[in-house]
Image (cartoon, rainbow, N blue to C red):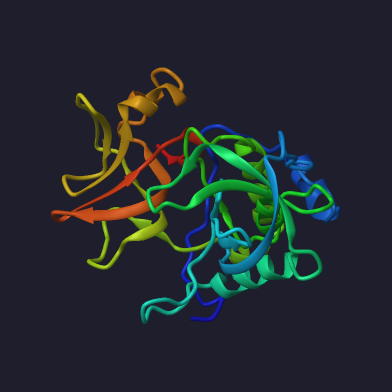
Length: 270
């Protein structure tokens, strides 16, 4: 699929941020202006050479570590007979280009060191101190994602994505990737996406809080993650239209996205 042939639904405002129109105008007029400034490291845990770039958010270091970049998700490259997603190859190539002149990177490990696939979770920094994640976000080749407890730089990454959207960079060129509608999911709809719908009810169980769009589609929030959300916020979302970003999964005929942090949730209408 061509990079600009994807279907898109215009995005809307967020629950937790507001950009003044005059500041937006300035950002459009001055390309070098960054809402976030520099997403700098808190500390560098180690320095390593990059051996191989798998895709836009996964690479291998010279010592054998397989790194998954914290705080972003990039479109998929072609794999297992599946075609590349729009901008998947561009994200991978942009990451490779960052290491063409100097493959040595500073590594800041996440508070949670590994993901469920055994990959090392980390922020990476170039020789000039700039953030690898921010470089991809600035080019519009990645989407910001917040997954506790690895929340270092989450605000900075969110702001960098916002600026790329304002400037219509990369995958935001025509408004962003397709937003799936909770009322019109297809059998094959799974993977990282944005999903919108009206919350019919908010349900609390011993383990989960569910924002249900229907009996077959919901957003799931682990009770252990509830403290990241403002008190009373989740209950207030009943009957509101919201958009969530995350990994859509299907199990026993039901679709759901696990939302880990408020940054992954937006109100898009009453």
